[in-house]
Amino acid sequence: MYTQSMDLPQKKEQSASAPGAPENPEYQREFDARLAQGEFIEAKDWMPEAYRKTLIRQISQHAHSEIVGMLPEGNWITRAPTLKRKAILLAKVQDEGGHGLYLYSAAETLGISRDEMFEALHTGKAKYSSIFNYPTLTWADIGVIGWLVDGAAIMNQIPLCRCSYGPYARAMVRICKEESFHQRQGFDLLMTMMQGTNEQRVMVQDAVNRWWWPSLMMFGPHDSESTHSERGKQWGIKRISNDDLRQKFVDATAPQADILGVTLPDPNLKWNEKQERYEFGNIDWDEFWNVVNGNGHCNRERLAARVSAWQDGEWVREAALAHANKRAAKHPDGRVGEQAAPSMETAPMQTAPTAGST
Amino acid sequence: MMNTGNDRSKEWPLWEIFIRARNGLDHKHCGSLHAPDAKAALQSARDVFTRRQEGVSIWAVRAENICASDPDSKAEMFDPAEDKIYRHPTFYKLPKEVDNM
Ligand SMILES: [Fe+2]
Ligand SMILES: [Fe+2]
Image (tube, rainbow over all chains, first blue to last red; front, side, top):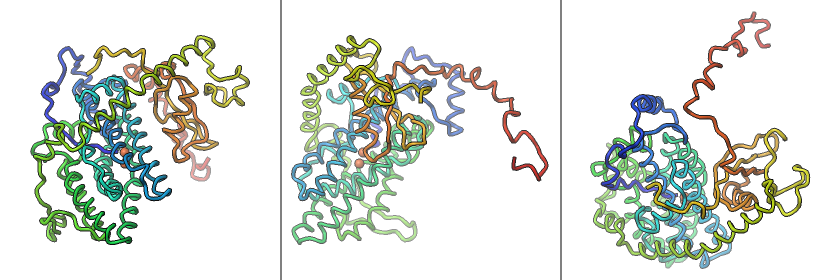
């Protein structure tokens, strides 16, 4: 899972509430009080329109990142060097697909449909993490993505397990449980390569050189540039600032690079004894915005892959639904299994028994 | 963002998924997914929610078939139980010798 804090200025959504939104001072007070006490907000609870919109934007963007994030790694599944690595990579990419599904479902509880979210992605209206617009050139990239990209994602995501919106928080708990495997398999892959030939070590270093800075960009713009930080904090959906998370990531990662035996491509990276943290160089924000705005190496390719997957799957979606509707017409009692329903206890793949009957 | 005029009748219906982690435990809600029918819902639920042996049994329920209490009537639904503290064992102060009853 890959979230990116992109507090992109979204002109239309700046106003605190949409015109005609059912704002209600009494409900608002109750809502604020619940947030202040660290309580969760659930799907059917009253919430300010701006809270709902911000969550829809953040969660759907997050879901898109998971789904688009399958592409750069999927690129290497057929070329994995061993069966073991292939099985691992398949499992990892499948996890990312699952993460996307958890998150789309969480966003849907806020009143947007799955198809509307897809449409927003496919038309370029919705963003996804810019990291996936970089190409995966060698097998070492697969290890570095696990180590750095999933590593950065984990930093970003752990605080979201405590976010104020219940369905999002629960999805994040599930996701975070699965992420640790992603980072560890990446590091394991890189360690194996570092113990290999000189050529393999050069390959790892090259991949680290290319992915380090884009990974730091995953935390989003500097706090001073972030438009929504304050409100996000108030709402309990952004508990730790972009810069603080980025610092945590550098502090955790730099010693790992030493263990691996690679150099991080930053001449200004050094341990500050007094502040007990690493200092690091300036991020190239022009590159960041360039990629966010659609001009990275792979923006067009990624989007085209998603759009064609959606279009090519249309007849399958339609056929499955037509088949289900036809069956439902034949079995108006709701049973959909192949045989006439025997007793519930012995009928796998039947509709579930009611809670009272078990 | 909402109501962009999409044709929702073309979307697969939503299913709520409940999983029994192991025998002896209740089925517990773990999320939702879209599927054209019950059979496909169970199949998808297996792939989406039990990739690491998280369950031994799955229920899939059409989301539209679940009826939920209204959060607005939370107070009248649940508050009447608030002052009935005599329903809790701790309400009764017993001599030390028998207090583990
Ligand atoms: Fe993920
Ligand atoms: Fe991941």
